[in-house]
Length: 334
Length: 213
Image (cartoon, rainbow over all chains, first blue to last red; front, top):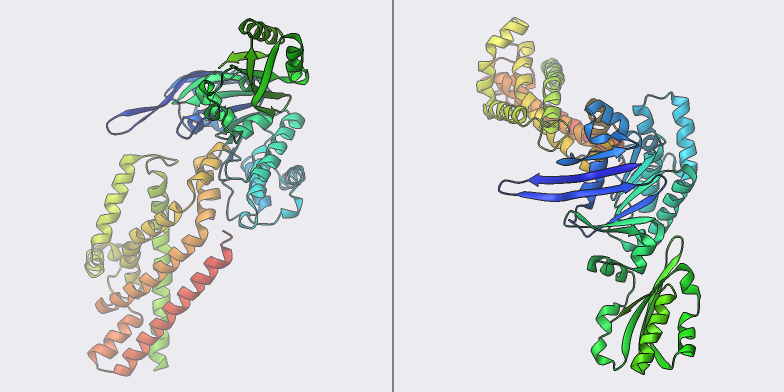
């Protein structure tokens, strides 16, 4: 659906060049919700804005459904932008126009007949559950309502792709949930491919299928969300995951303070449902002390970890660890 | 006294309304150009932007009285005469145009960059962004700017009275200053004050009625 090849973007200032993106390649599948997470300044906004060329890439290629976006002239680019909706952190609604007029805007650009615009706007308003706000002005709406209008407006041209540039970052947690539910519904019902730029791990956890972590303009980790939660490789990924949990496991547990062997189990989906630890205790002559644990509900499955202290005979402990490894759980000795 | 004041008031209204119109016709597109050619905007043209800025600054540096005399040949060309109420419209328009350009520029710049970005993301063209986004979004502020222009032009037109333009300023100078008829001078100044107050009031109301922000 979307293929990005060796994308780089630099900004020149008077005495130096800053690389906002360095050699980024990724492939986003049709109907997928793809998350791009990073801290501020990591380059994630630049990346999404290169996709519709609000930002011109310095080098590299972007293909959307086989069409090389980076090679289009201005006119074809404008046409292809109509197949991509975009929503923003600060909604960017037309302040002087009603909700109706805001959603009608892209349709008026298409010069559709008034009747058709009317019908389309009403359908969209119903879809985002804002029919009663048809004639309100943006200043009369709450943040969540504003973003719903922006989403309706982004969908007006029946786009195949929806780009969200920090679309939930200015919203409170409850409103964020409802916007994420709406986006998920859009993906399922309208089969729109969604790219989410965010710095909130909750967003990734709640609706993304796959995620890329971006740091200093580079993708440092890319995986399905399940795999990332189960087995984060980079410290950035780990810190994003632990940002979801109020207690930072690594900060609290110091292996030197325990006399037994500390292990960290990560489990995903099915393996989380089996009494593996209980089996282990019955099978081997060791004692188990639970130090910390957590489970995150992902969109399709659940992922979690457990930190255990094992005490007893060294050989028994080693065998127990081997046993765990055989049960489709990843085990890490701390 | 009314037979003196009323024709002069009508002359002032005539001069000010036409010169407002012409200065808008010249200044408004310049203001739009100043905004869109700026670095990072939708039609980035740094050289043109610098050139426009230079011309506007130079024109705005001229004292109005000197500019009036400098454009006598142009007035002669367009209106056929250099003094009188109609002839004064030419220097008034030329003097106010760069002012209008600056006022329009600052109003248009108030439009949130994010809204422009959204329009681009929707595939809007540059003219579509100017006419369907930039101007409608800046309208309340533009109306305040136009109000300010009208009031400025009332002031300029009174000055033009000193060198043969008509209107209330001319009346105040001819009767009040030269003939020491203080009551006529006070009356004309009073009418000018009423005019300014009235226009400012209407402008403010209009702007706040249409502003939905």
